Length: 245
Length: 245
Image (cartoon, rainbow over all chains, first blue to last red; front, side):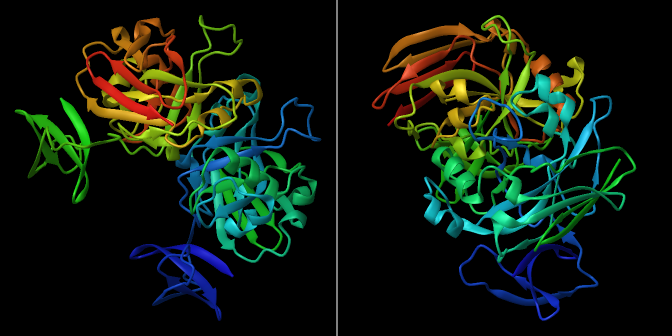
């Protein structure tokens, strides 16, 4: 099932795709969905970031793709950076190279503390595409991941949450710049599974419904420059498109 | 002027101290305060964390108090960790030593981007006391400051916002454990001023009203254990008291 957050004349509205339309729901985190009776056609659907998290975490796997001595490690990204599909990423000027990073994002469905691997995925509402935009040259002087991750619209999210992703561990992730494939990979290249990420994170921090865990870029970091259009395509979910200015 | 967020039978309520009572206001971030006519006596006042930030930042000054090679550097702390005056901090078990860290916290008053030193303090609503509770032994394996800063009620805040702190650069900070003074210092021992912190942070991230910047612990990190009571006393503001369990 796809869950979107639509921009409607009455304000942001959660909706579920059924029979070719987006049917409005009260609260997608409820166990039993309550439909309002309102609906939006596919043609009129304007997608917002499908979650409004209070906490956004990135995952540093710190394995295989670098020689970092630390184990898996999370870091916080500002919720102020969350952007909608179609929003323009404002690349910070004179701060070195900017990367788009295509990733699978996990949307938490219910309060999650000290999860075991067995119960971890039961606490997931679904998955969406995220572009973890990064001023990559800051990494050398920003071990806290603050400076490189804080720009305007640096976390585009969407276009919707897919609740039935067939296999989160074997999901393709492609990144296109101006229509050309620049990265072709998938979660199968990440050193930690979704369940392992959630076990680690919730062993330290209690997550709440709507919180977001970005599972990391499996070789899907791609340099971008102003004027580019970036598409992050996550298999089984869809395409997240944003311009860079 | 003192601005508090009170726990009332009708829910959280912002209030301003006038003539010996707490007079309720609509929104403390408005230029002209609007009073509701409601009031709470001192005796009935139950204080909540006086701000509800979307972003909580800590400041690593990375100067003088350690030999860290990096310049001033911010990091995010989860808003889920914010606690009220009087709340019990749950020290994470079997994760090494826990420190209380008494600090001056800055509450942002209006949207702040790319501030100059001259205009920085004009974007501050006021100041409050914060206890940046930390699993200090995690620092060695947690360069992102996630693991050591994520426990339940790890960021007690309050008891109120003081809008007219005489000199944020010369404000005493004391930490008491079970009534005994364990640290006696102040912002004069921090290597960066409030203005310098805000210039740095807003050069990367746009802050919004209510966001919180913890200015760092000037030698005010004190080991605590379950059963302790911690008082953070910031001169010109007041006392923030919390138990540790």
